[in-house]
Length: 227
Image 1 (tube, rainbow, N blue to C red):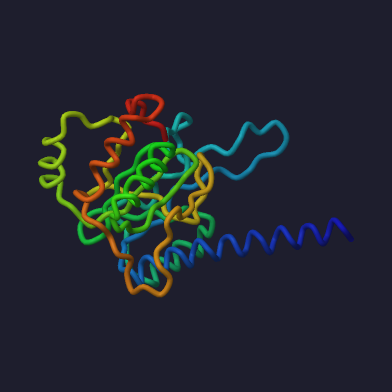
Image 2: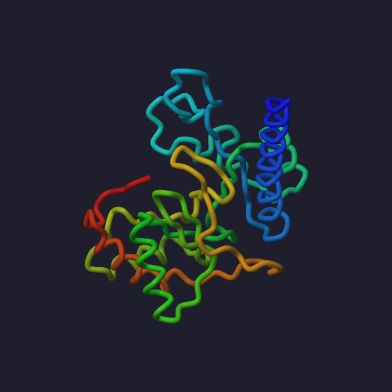
């Protein structure tokens, strides 16, 4: 009897978890008009001797396990409710990927330690922040859409930009909560305000100086790109 009850609890947890993925995808696509698509996800858990859940893609050395597009490709990202429902009905545990740029949010990501420092500095400066996505290794600040030309001009004016900073603009993507990837659970460090028609986003100029400074002062000098 205990074994049966334990199995039922696990099944309820899995169903709740999968419903959360679909709910998050629908919120992004239909309420906020952010184009999304399912990520490749992780391999099913193995039995004894399994060395961990790697990426479900064919690359055994995948650098971002579970956290990238595969099938469908990034260009398939959509705000269509029927398509989003179909995707996550067929793959309920798939990570939620946001296709960045265009009219959708862009993002700037950096190592988790540097991200925590940057948020403290930005809060002290009184900078209003939008949503912040966190994984065990990296934090990503969502910002208003920017063009590559605008970003290039902004970075050109800097003495040095750490290579650990990543910019998710046109043609890029970002994994959103409550996805699970090879590095662990994706969560909101700063969640969108409940009830808002669409999350507010700062301009990239408002946050980039603090992100560059925080990455430069990181323990590794900001030169290592950690996924």
